[in-house]
Length: 289
Image (cartoon, rainbow, N blue to C red; front, side, top):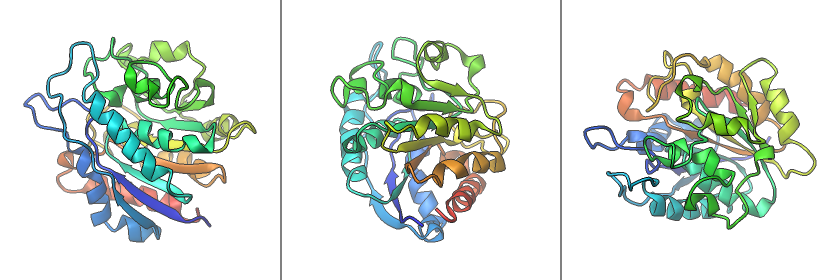
């Protein structure tokens, strides 16, 4: 049994606004999870939230990334909180750009692996991104591709390509918008969802040269019929039980350092059904951690 700590990362800086200028509501997700009693249900220690800077780039900088300086500052604040605990850490986002801060916070541990479970590969760079949102570029930035956000840790990437396993993406119809053509030429392990996906990923993530691994979960990996409350739903995907079965061997592995959950938008979930499904999923997979 390991102690679990929960940290909120209520940021929407990595997403473009709605067409009418309204901001995405993913920053409210940590509060909704807590209102469902998630901290108590997991028997976790609550570390509170790391508040994000104000959203600035309602209009995208030409050819650039929205809120670049704000995301850089937020990543450093988030990293400070991540690095301060030795518990199994569950980070509640927020959008996918929080990956940069969580990985930055794990840098003191040395070289680590990354299980990237997401409906999209998020391997775009500013030159091909339609939205300019870092949430669609986070994996590329984490492995050192892209603009200034790819160099938060200096010249070394936050995680090496050969230490990453991408699992269950479903964005092939959107090529090249999410950068899948670039990822195919990289050292990233690209795994479809299948029964042995977790075990195959663990073969990469638990090599002796690595000091543990982090788990990124974007809930848009789920089928939109069960998880419509996301900003970029893709047809098909996993069911709740599929995702639980994929996550259990990862979360319960002794080398797992923690997990982040991203992209759930309470504004798109008026009756709270999606939040309840996510909370139930977390309770299921964390039993016995």
